[in-house]
Length: 326
Image (tube, rainbow, N blue to C red; front, side):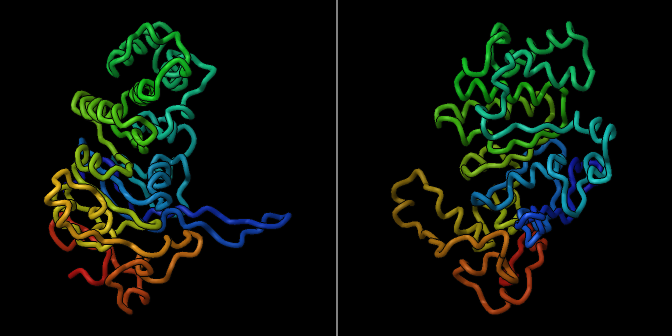
C-alpha cells in the first residue's frame, strides 16, 4: 500500500485503564480495553469496526483522536505521530480529525442553541470572525438538510435524528479529513438510521472524507464500509474487504457474528446453519491466555491456550488472527 494513500496508521495501539483500591488508590490491575491492534485507513475510504459491546471499539476511536492518551503504541495521522504531539501542536492537528458521538441527546450542550454549538469549533480554533462563523453555520445546516432558521433553537426542540444531524454539522465545521463515527445511528429509530447513513455517504463524496465507522449493525456496516475489521475483547481478529469478509469469514468469531445476521430470503434462512456461541465474554481485566476467543471457540485446540495468534495476512488484503487458519 502506497504510504501517501494511507491517512491513518495505527501501530500496536494499547489502552489500559487502571483498577485502583484503598485510600491511597493503589493500582491492583488494569482493564485491557485495547490490547495491541494495528491497522491502516486509506484516504477517502470507510473502515467499519464491529464487535460485541465492551470489546474496545469506542476506546479505539477515542485513542486514535487522542481523547484517551494511549498506554503505548503509535497513531500516525497524515504522516505525523499523534502520540508525540502535545499542547498547541496537537490542537492544530485536531482540526483535521473530528468525532460524531453515539448519543445525540448527551453530546449536545442543552444550554446552547444549535447555532452556538456548530459555531463553537470555529471560534475555539479562531478560524473565523463572528460574521463568517454565522454564515458558516447557515451553510452547514443546509449541508445536513436542516433549515438554517433552526440555528436559534435548543437541542431539546429536535428529534433524535435532527440532533444527530446537528452533531454531524458540528463535526464538519472545521473541514476535517478524518471523522470517527462512534455508533452514530444506534440511538436512533430504525426509520431514521438509513437517512443518517445516506447523509454520511453523501458528505463523504462531497468533501472527500475518510471514516472510521463503529457500529453493531452488521448489515449497515456492509452497506457503508469499504473494508471491515472485527474486534473481540481488545484485539483485532479479522480485517478484510467487506464482500470478502461477509462471504468468506475465516475467524470463528467473525463466522459466528455473521451467522447471526438474518437473511431476507425465507428459503435460505431456514436452511442456514447458525453458530451459537456458548459462555460469557471474559473480563477485559483478566482475559484468557493465548487466543482471547478460545474459551468460546467451537474449534479451539491446545495451541490456542499457549500463545496469542499473530494478526497476519493470509490472502491479499485479508488479515486474520487465528492459529487454525492457514
